[in-house]
Image: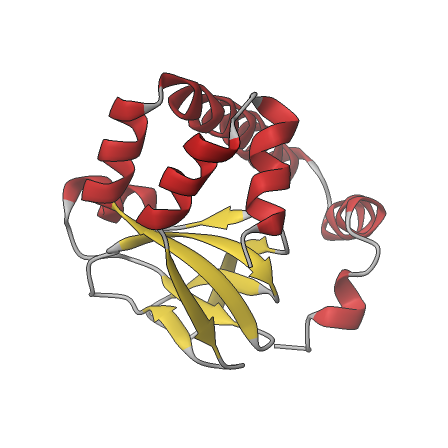
Length: 169
């Protein structure tokens, strides 16, 4: 475990073995079985999760009981309810494993320590945040201007293996 995290860090920043060893000490390894929750609506998001293996989905349920998927997280992706994580407020979302999943979790105090000790890791998270904002803006524009078929075709062109891994929900 930790190989993929090290790879993802190394793609964006230069990190020594000693620095990465300290990083590893701040993470908690957790296995989550298929259909089990990392976070349920109404609970506070205590962790930011890095997916080493498996697949997560973040979703909410409306008043009529319909599920609305916000995001999937495949290997090498991060997932959390950032608002809940940063403010300690109850989450509006559920985060569920769609496959047996191996996660690396970091708490807010541990993440703060990591960012304080290694500004280059703060830069890594800054780049992730920028990329997330760009993707969110593009997805919002797509949902405002594209038909359901256009959104589906675009999603499948970006994530062609998704149908094989995501059960019909």
